[in-house]
Amino acid sequence: MDQAPTGIIVEIYSDIVCPWCYVGKRRLERALASIDDGVRVTWHPFQLNPTMPLVGIDRKAYLEAKFGSLKAFGRLEEQILTAGEGERILFALQKIQRTPNTFAAHRLIWRAGRQGKQDAMVEALFKAYFVEGKDIGNVKTLVHMADEAGFDRAETKSFLSSNEGVSEVTAEEATGHRLGIHGVPYFLLNSTYAISGAQPPERFAAALKAVGADAAARKAGV
Image (cartoon, rainbow, N blue to C red):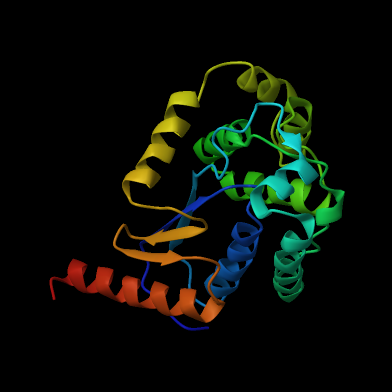
């Protein structure tokens, strides 16, 4: 295993309805598996559809409005499916019936981060949407997903019915916009090195080593 200096923080701006964010997660995980421990990953919200109605909209209507036609989306779908196969993600896009508003899902991710279980929540949401075709804008679905990720159902339901995390998630998203982020996934390493898109694992590994080495040099006063 290649050695990488410790103390690296990877901040990921993403949205649950972004298939490339799911692919990027897998590729980053592959890169992290090739180096030593010492990398902390945190997730931040970036809604691709911030004006989406809370109840979401019909998936076909959304795709036609965004891409002009379902046929036009079909070309992109092929690329997504191919990338998914390479990362062992069983994308089942045909199961998705509604394109959701993802703000509540991002609140759950924020809450999970406060409990040290962010990755489990993110993984559960990605799987629910892209593999199982569930409506992750629906509160009942979110409560079920949180339960599967190891969170208490009653506490999750109470949290989603409150305003807890609303201002914090809004502020985190605003930070992403101030950074000039226009698309996701977007990876920020130690607040100094940015990677945009679901890059190959080798690109992530090289960046992690370079940023880690720089951090170690700074700490040593070199």
